[in-house]
Image (cartoon, rainbow, N blue to C red; front, side):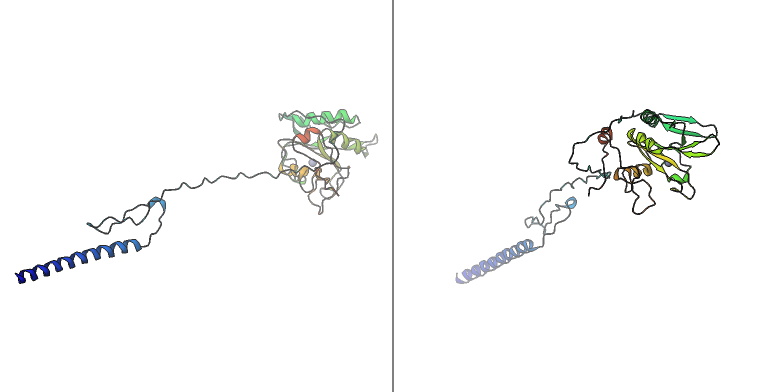
Length: 277
Ligand SMILES: [Zn+2]
């Protein structure tokens, strides 16, 4: 009876030890599972369930990561440099003679016999308006020596490549065949009121021996070449109070008294950009 009792005790102890060992193993494995480093993986591969092997309970090592949508990348369109209107203390007063030109870019070809001048209808309308304001001896359209859309004249450095650019002769001929220069001041005034950035190019201004003439760029012409646009608002530009020639550093001042600003030019975003003292 005692032997049986002892044997039973021994067997129970052995069973208990085995149970304890099993529980201990479970505990170690569970703890080991808890201590395993949890590594975050990219959302696309998140969520694999790691198991330590049956029949042990499944231990989830990694929380399921919710894929996050990447923030949309907004394309930034290049922006043109903004024209900064110069604040003026006095209200804007438009000079008499301003007239908005028609936005008509139909090409007009002027046949000059040995050559042609091509303008757009907007530029022609502006020249016709300038003619009525001028009322002098020079016919602007007849006196054209270079039109627009012409990239063959290197001395014009691209200003005539697009629309709105025109060269006008200021020379008259005496009865004896000699040349004289017209009074250019009223010509410039009329062309500026009609909407041109216009300057007298003196002899030699463009190259050695270059002839005197008026170079004019139609303000707001939608087909201006980049070089012509620079003559309006660039560093040496008309609206900054300079003569539009890029080869001078610093730029040369406008010899004709600064820009004429009409309301329609302001509507297009142009402004008097001369530095205020
Ligand atoms: Zn020119």
